[in-house]
Length: 166
Image (cartoon, rainbow, N blue to C red; front, side):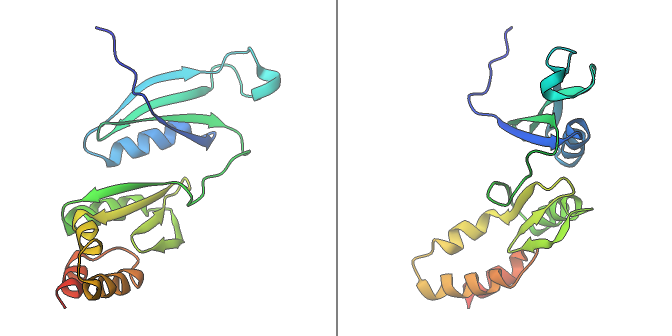
């Protein structure tokens, strides 16, 4: 059976650590896998400057979302302008992802549930309940939740809920 190609796939450019990064993410997410790995050939060496046999791309899937990790040079860097949101059902789940993705990451980039991992990729580790709190019809509730959230690094669901309830 022919595998259907996902219409939109996040393509992540890593500085020569694409396979390491893909395997790292797959080790963190429970529903995850490595797919095809392609390699550079000698063709185009004058452009890509990668040795023949070096990993070119690694396809991987996290929670049903397909990604492509590309091995490149140092021409491009990740910024917080693009991040991946992990919607968590509980504080335990928030703690799980936060504790794993912050290892070796940029501590200065941690605020309001955002973090930057050891590869420079930005993530938002957020409780699913937060969206409903911030969309509440009571502006005072929204104000309290927002104030508490802005003071946090890792989001604390109990504290957010306490602020929401007043």
